[in-house]
Length: 102
Image 1 (tube, rainbow, N blue to C red):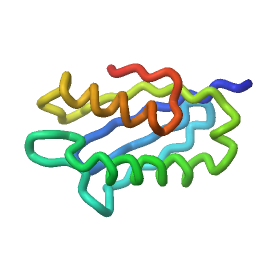
Image 2: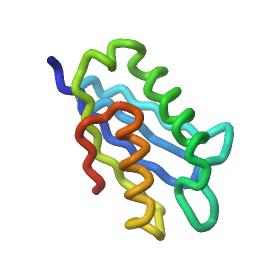
Image 3: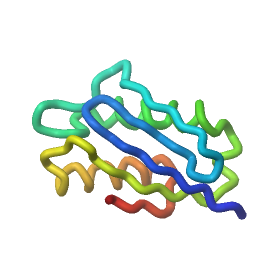
Image 4: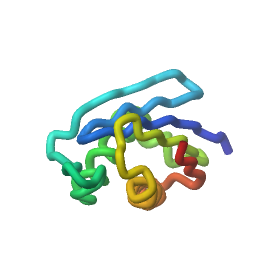
């Protein structure tokens, strides 16, 4: 099996996702806000759907045949510890097996 490595930079209602193997990247703002003034992931369902759509746009079905790993950063987060728990859970539910919060 191939290992797919990604990086994600998550800020308020915005995600930049990069496939490190191919260099492909996508950066978008969410059509439905998922952040609030207090939390990076306030609307979990909106964040889950948005990230899932970004991954499908970038990778299509081929992604599911790999062991996906990701390094996640929070460029503008004030509540890093609280946000990291929510984000780790989010990426686990999206199918990532190795998640590093940087």
